[in-house]
Image (cartoon, rainbow, N blue to C red; front, side, top):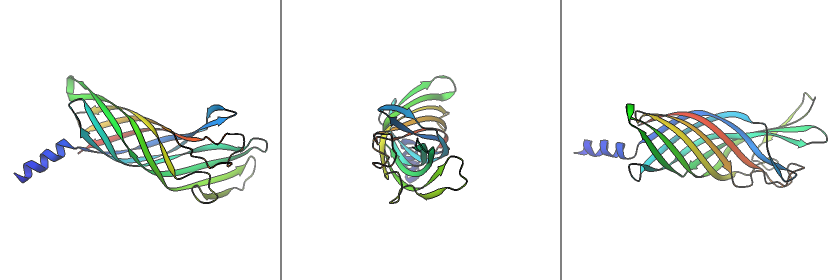
Length: 204
């Protein structure tokens, strides 16, 4: 009886382990016009719990280590640039809709909802064009450019194979002020994280 209970619990709340990579940048409003900054490639690691609400709908949450950041022009006149890296511990709060495919027991899944993230570590490099030297410091320290807290909305498209292997293409848009006030000239300081990611996962 105890063994049957454990098996039932596993099937009811499957856990998905994910690994993948990100393409991260900033949504940069120069002169009141939204402009994406150059992107940086990073890593994506996560554990997601699926909580069924019905045969079609699920609620998803968990913990994700996700790399965010990007490149910015810190001073347009003097051609100075900064490269910003940040690693966040993130909790998605997504609602999921499953579209089953009759053949081969596969499905397409569509996930959408808010996320909350807190920065764990990061490095920022400040360099002038043509210069061999650079200045590096903690992204989230006293001199760093970013605030630790990040929150926004995320959207995921998934292909689920045999209820086990999951391929995920996701996109996130920050809704909070990522950049500290006055850190970058020529903007209105409303700089937010923008992250795309691709991962492969396995459900247990």
